[in-house]
Length: 419
Ligand code: ASP
Ligand code: MG
Image (cartoon, rainbow, N blue to C red):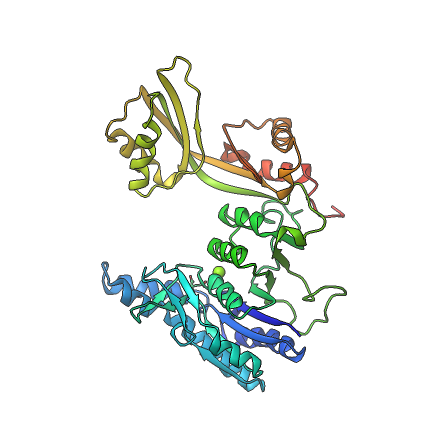
C-alpha cells in the first residue's frame, strides 16, 4: 500500500467526461489498496476567463477580490471530481484551500505557501476517503483567499504531498512525461524514465513547460518524488512489469535514485532573446551595479551576462541578454541610467539560447568543448556562452535554433533507439 497524491491539470479536467476519465485513474489506485488524495486545477481555459472578467470589471482592481474570483475555478472542479468519485462508489469530499487549511502569506496573486495543516487530510486518508483539494489557492493569516500564481496547482500538490508524507505525487497532464527535448523540434526526442530535481529545475526554467518551477523547488526541498504522466492514458491499463507506478511517465527524484547517469539528459531552447552590448564602460567598482540596478528596478529580467577583462584598466565591454519584448525599454533605461558612461550601446533581437543540461557534467570534463565542436561542425556561430555546474548555454542566431537542437540531441546520444 502506498499513499499517493494525484494532481490533475486543466486539460485533464476540461469537461465532465474528462473528469470521469481522471476519476477512473483515481479508482485504479484506490482499488489497488492505496490511500489517495487528489489535487485539481480549474478546467482548461477557466482561469484565463476569470482573470479576463476581473480586468473587464476594473483595470485597477483589488488584488484580494481578484483572488476571490480566480480561485473559484478550482472549487468547481474539486466539487465535480468528488461528485463523480462518489458516483463510482468511492467515499470522497472536496476541500477548498481554507478548509484544509493551506496557509499562505498575503501576497495576493502570487502567494507563497507557509504551511499545510495535515490533520484533516490525514484523517480522511486513514479512513479510506479520497479528499479532493483545490489547487492554486490558500488562505492568508488575515483569513482571505489567496492564489499562488499561474500554474500554481502543481505547487499545491507538492505541498499537500509533503504534508501528508505521501510516497509520491503523480502530476497528470496532457503529455506522458519529460522529454530529452521538445519533440516538435526533434522528432527523435525521447521520454526520460527518470530525471533529477536539479535537472528538472533547469528544464522547467528554460522553457520545458511541464511543471511550475516553484513546485520543483519545493519537491526538491521536501524530498517529494514526482511522477509526470498522462491522464489521457488508459486508466485500466495493467501495470508495466517492474514499474512502481505502472504505465509510462517520468519520475522526478533525487540524483541518488538514478542509477544510469547520463552526462547530458536534455537540450532546451529559448527563443526571442535579445542581446545588448555596452562598449567602453568605465572599469571601476560599482559599474555592474549601475548597469543592472536600473534594469532590475524596471523589472527587466536579465539572463546571460558577459563582461570582458579590461585591456587598458580604464574601460571594458559588457554584453547581456533579455527577452525580445523588453529590448526597447532596456535601451531607454540604460540611456537614462544615472552615473553610467559608455562609448556606445548596441544590440539586436532574435537570438536563441540553446542549453545542454545534465548532472553528469559535474564529473565529466569536456562537455562544453564538445558542444562547441558539434555546433561548429554545422557551421553555427556562437555569440555568447554561459555555464553552470550542470548546464552549458550558448546564444546563437534564431534561424539556426532547430538545427542546433537536433544536432546536439544526436551528438549526445539522446535520439530514441531505432531511428
Ligand atoms: N488554474 C490555475 C492556472 O491556470 C492554476 C493551475 O492550473 O495550475 O494558472
Ligand atoms: Mg499546469
